[in-house]
Image (cartoon, rainbow, N blue to C red; front, side):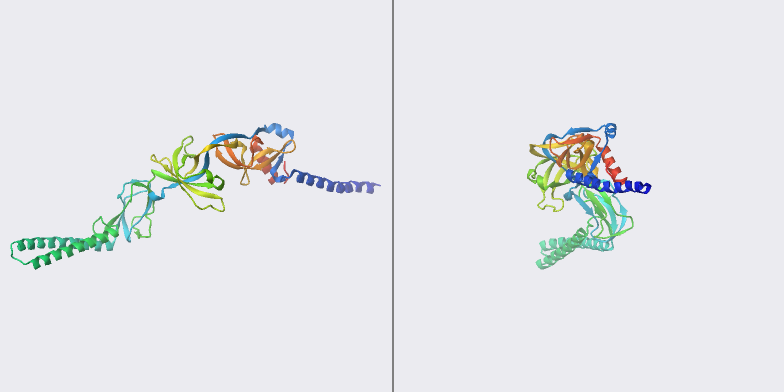
Length: 380
């Protein structure tokens, strides 16, 4: 009798387990949601967390907000280096220094420049001699002392000397050594701007392939934007743009769309656009991230939620929506758009106006989901 009684609980447990698993599996299929995106809390946990559930509202927008990166104006940035190999004997430009057009950034010394400059000096001397001789022959010819042929020979000598001088000066110009003495010449700034990069070192040998300095005019910058395919019809060249950055909250910089690409990126489904922004005070800096609001005109209703309602879960932006049972919440993936103000953001996809979402306590639900994944493997 005792043996029979001890065997009954084990048999009962084994028989009851299968229907229970089948029932839970059927329930999960009925809900149609991934159990990994669901959090269930009891009444005590709900009371402690202080959750608040709100309704998705809408705002009327007259602009399209996109993100981008501030870069140099490619037409006003120059990588400066020598046109001929030489050794750096002096450095005049430094990182961050404001320079004027033609200002020397470095002094180099070259044997070829030295030879060409010596030829120039010799040609200058020959021109002086030939000019004096021609003037003398001109006076003698006027007095009838010499023939016209002798005068023409003196003039030809002068023209040959002048051609040699011009040739030497042209070679120096091509070598970028119009100014200087002996074998030394200067590497100069092509326009007024700021030295944003310096790779030159005293005593180094540099050639045409070397980039010694980068000079950029930062009074005007570009912002490279990625326009989604669905928004292309709202964007046109010449539209005004308001640019904002995290570095200057509440401050905007006016710009204009000057270029819209002709090719769609098949991976991101975006088209590259360019905005030109005046930057006379130098507040904006290349490399900054920026948000650009394109003034498209024509109001559009867009759903918005509080910023704290959006959480990042495994690289996805999600909001939490109430589930089918009390204490149940489901992570709903969304596509987040621009900020409406400091408290709300636009939701481009994943929610509709009137949907119910968790507006307070979203982070707590994210923490509960992570604890379920890394703890006992069950959703709490």
